[in-house]
Image 1 (cartoon, protein in one colour):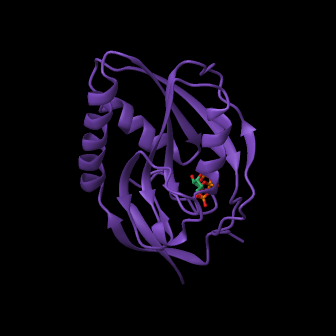
Image 2 (cartoon, rainbow, N blue to C red):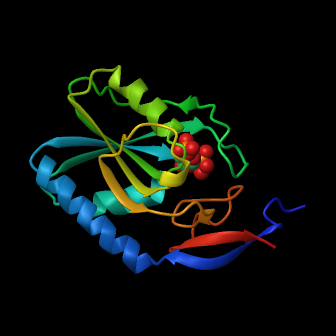
Image 3 (cartoon, rainbow, N blue to C red):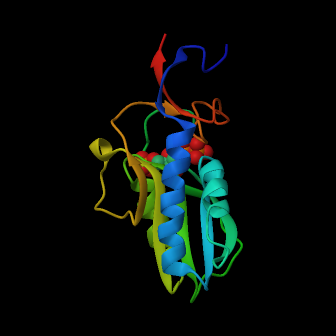
Length: 181
Ligand code: PRP
């Protein structure tokens, strides 16, 4: 049986236009702070891929942007975080003495981002900042660790623009709320 068969798209929470506008603002802030220097964007697979792709293309060309990726496992195919974070793929770049931005699609409990921030901080970057498209403050279990935030959203199950349920709906250009059938 299709694992997503019990769920359906309900309504759009954030349109592609609103997402694009907000990303331009985030990119302008980042460009203002890092223009002229090298900056390593580190995306957390798989959800952050689409957000990071649009973010780096919105930067001022004075930013020497590099891209790398990390993969972790936390949710599996479930819709709630297990809390256990495991690194599946490390980044390739040595970040000692470098400026790094950790890019995520969503911060739910914050356990994933907190684990990654601690792990990368131990490697001695010059600066390490976090950039997350969506934050669910209602579910947060960690202290504030966000430097750049796209939107705060209510505790609803969302898909699209990189976010999935059981691997599905990442390709949708808008962000949708999903409900049980
Ligand atoms: C999602 C999201 C974050 C994490 C956030 O990843 O991309 O990595 O969960 O949850 P937390 O704040 O409660 O730790 P997921 O495990 O769904 O993998 P994916 O990016 O491949 O979809």
